[in-house]
Length: 468
Ligand code: 4AD
Ligand code: MG
Image (cartoon, rainbow, N blue to C red; front, side, top):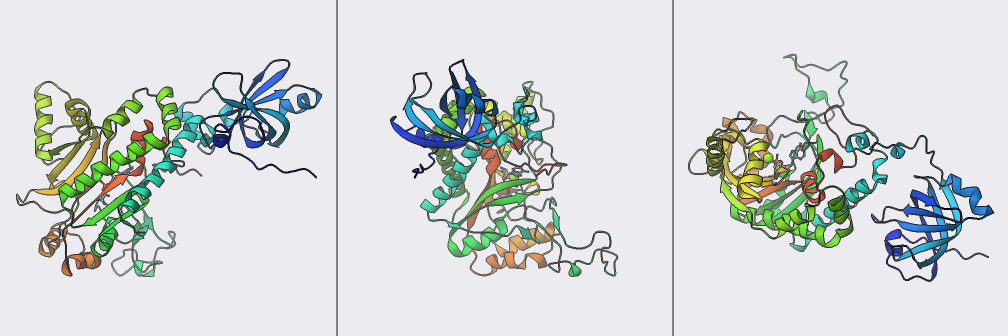
């Protein structure tokens, strides 16, 4: 009878003492050697690090070694021994090797010399097997955990808001329609428009751009809630910072004013960055050493600095001054227009050299639900702007006054009827409240130092691209 040994993950093996028999399973990263021995670097995804397998060459191993190529999947039993080579404390002296899956070196997509991110996006089904995407995807998972941990420790309720909805929270008309109508034979009403009463939900529906409106229903009952889920935007922006499907974290809090909201946003981001530095060191160190040796410095910088808090109007003054001093922007700077990413980055990277929370934007460039200031021109909005990213958080104090909210809805020619459920929060026991949305992938861009948002989500959805 043979005694079965349980598989140990590479991460755990590397922390173990030498001198025991182990079983490891994973994918071959490299194989090299000489006439007497072969060295296999094996990775199983549990860590950025590989375990080294040492194979004595003899008639038996010579027969299978040629089948063990980069990308092949194998299981190895052997003794965990102290490593003589540098770079690792332990390695495995192989006794038995099982090949689960061979990997044709001529056809394996990751065998190519081209390891550019552009190329890897064309083989995104395989790229999690690379060191870089392994690191990014582990970080993504860790940060999701850290987000839940942060809010649960604060007593926030995790609220599941719907993905299919009939309301356009941001009012930007960037929604993907959800329908089961036959597009080749759309039923029409008397006006000749599509008859949505015949559609699945009996009305026109779309994928949500934000869970905020439903989040407010939660906050005005449960006190403090957060959502964390996918959101969808049909904006035709082919930029390194936009996705058509991205994940958003949206806390919403009763009795918070804009200042409380800013305090929470700042503490939240700092805690997440701190968590990454404390718990994901190997992966961050790898990304720092491989691509951007100022990454760790930048992360530590954010944790240890106080964010600037600045009114939009003052931000515009700074930008105009920059222009007067010869700075060239592609887009004009005018009070009343939205800031372009070049403007945001100028404020953050060049003028202040640290994150900036910009507040009190003109009401005409912000959504209907924001609390109106007494000046009649601005609203209590807050955007958190980050180095290299631009806007990472968008939020506001909400308009709690029934009359003002209704007037704004009418002014924007939105349908009040479709929003009665939302307006009810102001009708029955209205309360001051605030919230914000953090783009999960924008956070990951910052934490990983990656340049393109398509490289921090496993299967990116962008205009003209929905592979897998
Ligand atoms: O500023 P936004 O549009 O705000 C809202 O949706 C509010 N309802 C949030 C709230 O107050 N609860 O989006 C929030 C954040 C942005 O700051 C950005 O980080 C991210 O979501 N974001 C995107 N990320 C990737 N791709 C896109 N197309 C994004 N659009 C917004
Ligand atoms: Mg925004």
